[in-house]
Image (cartoon, helix red, strand yellow):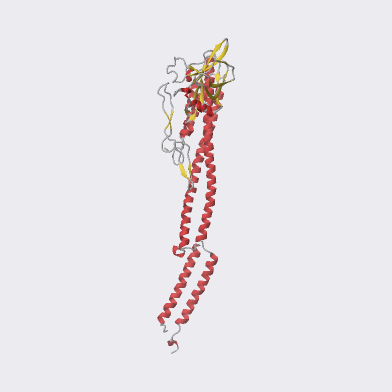
Length: 445
């Protein structure tokens, strides 16, 4: 076979260019530390690396969401702690105000302090985060959630209204897991069950305390011994479909001995307060400090599974009401406390009524504190869960990084060995080209 000089030159040049291309690729791999520079280097490996990279980015976004949720919940937790401290301070001052040796001016001074605490509580309720969103507005982050209306009359005093919603802001913190990063203000400040959570006790007739008692009897907050019986009684035919369910304990003197009797004074019995209510129990002797069971011995016989205790001696004609609990805001409780502390106590009857109402407000404060504690526990559980998710995300990211390293990273020992071998091949090609290119008959003529 005849080989021309051009063929020799072309073959030599192609061999050197091929070696230089291989050396350039190895040099780029060594300088970048990556085995796969283009998908053509390893199509299957490149596809797998792309899948792992995308999955890792999604996990990284979840990790960032976890951090953001933890920051928001940490701020909420600090605000809840501030509410707890404030309510405890208010409770301590209210207990102090219950001391009978204090004068009316002393109690008014406590009321003034509670007014400052009320403003502080309203400020906490309208707290904002770094982005300017209100913490306790639900989904309405741009709306001021709690607004104090102006008093129009003594019958319509100032009140706090809620303009947020009941929602909680959710953040995607895992592939299939969302977590609330906020607390609804309605749940924290507004929807608090008054009394013991099941019913409210009060002195005076009709459940509203409109008829002042004349004796020294003071009723406690009561307790539910069997929640199932209580719920069955509320839903039974006892109330005859009334929307205003009220039990009343009335006292009378029989042969010089104090007795009590339970009455149903719900609106289903009589819409006219002047008409007699329906007696639901027998007339029983009263012993101060002894538990009074709430049960109806007159058809329909009903056991409410609850009891109250009345200390002191009620006068003939005194009464105490028991009403199922409704929701009451902590702002309303504090406003009622302030109004109560500003009322003068000019008689023993007024002092007895003051003591009973103050005890009822203290129970409502305790309910508000318990509600804050419940939400604090919920926020704490979420923060703990986020800590676990963060640790898991870190471990998973390490696994993703290891997978990408196995797919993409360069084996330096092999690459350097290949580079040295390719360098030797290039040098051999160059030297052989020099030798071959020097072969010519003209050199011998």
